[in-house]
Image (cartoon, rainbow, N blue to C red):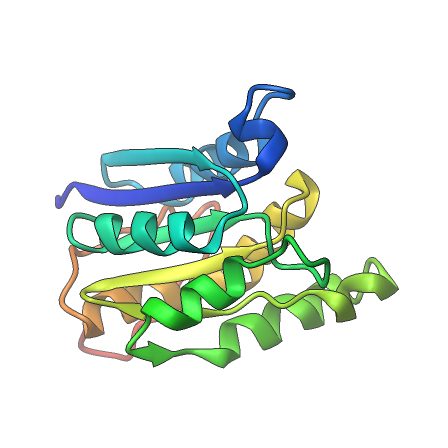
Length: 175
């Protein structure tokens, strides 16, 4: 079974300075470990909300990871620039990811409409922007992860095998 290389990027001024612990990045890794039967190798970064830093981090990770998952920086405040950074480094955007995450989040909070999550392809990696709250991370990953392994297949990444007791993924018949 393929080893999966996954980038996890938390964008937070305060967490990157050690003012508080980054729980969101840990939730991403725990959730993906529950989803996948593959061995996962994580490239973890906790960085400030600075667009050039986010862009360079995403570019660096896109050369060694099949999947990059970010948390934080997707709201409407002036410091929330993860979405812009992602859009700048991606050759193809996949707006359906953001649409699905917002649709699911709106079932829980009306402010989900303010979220600007997106996804796209950078080099040979899929980048997915998630919100910053641990509960929202799990809800959003549950909503979009069924499409992730097939997307990774289509862009030439490692073959992901899901724990079907935890999450049902979709691949067309014969894939």
